[in-house]
Image (cartoon, rainbow, N blue to C red; front, side, top):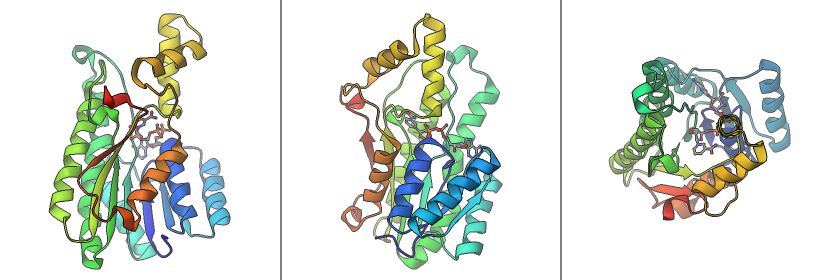
Length: 260
Ligand code: NAD
């Protein structure tokens, strides 16, 4: 379905981004991996995806907190593969604290990585997508792009901003063959959430298992995590012809979190 297409997935050395990269590779897209981590492990991931799916896979370690580096990632991809057809803005970080204690440096880092990186990537990738009359931009927002929780001022602000950016780009590209949508996951068990489970267990003096059950019970009515593979499937759907008229919208994959 995606043979001959080139997909960049930011923050794809781990978690949801890796699940998305694997799913797009399975459908035949060439992949640009991005994110941090151990060089040897990343090389193993890169080779593994290329071998399993017979696609070209490269890794670019551009730092998504820096606008020029984000634009450089797009330029480098065009230089190597000649095009960017699919841009998945997924890289993200979390930090929790009450708003009056929130460290300004953390605020800026979250806004830069979780929101501004998408702006820079979209701005750079869009002209060549429009020229070819086909493109898919998928912004990995969050249930926190639609509703709030305490102690997540920067994350909730950034993710709401990302949903807003998605709407504007959806409008500006309507009818061009390019679509722009957000996916809003609820809890997905990745390193980003493992840390929140561990913090909760430590703060309340409860086990990891109890903290996991509480975390789900508080927000996610299904009481089940969504998986990186399922998020990959959601992105694949948005890349399919069935989704040609879906743009500027936010799709929840949250086990019912935002239904109540
Ligand atoms: P994760 O920590 O497993 O992965 C984050 C990825 O981003 C990693 O590859 C990491 O190296 C990369 N990254 C971090 N900072 C970067 C930077 N400055 N430059 C380049 N790459 C950087 O987290 P995850 O849970 O897979 O999260 C992926 C996205 O999904 C994030 O945007 C997150 O907000 C969102 N999300 C996650 C959940 C969840 O429950 N896990 C829920 C909703 C939304």
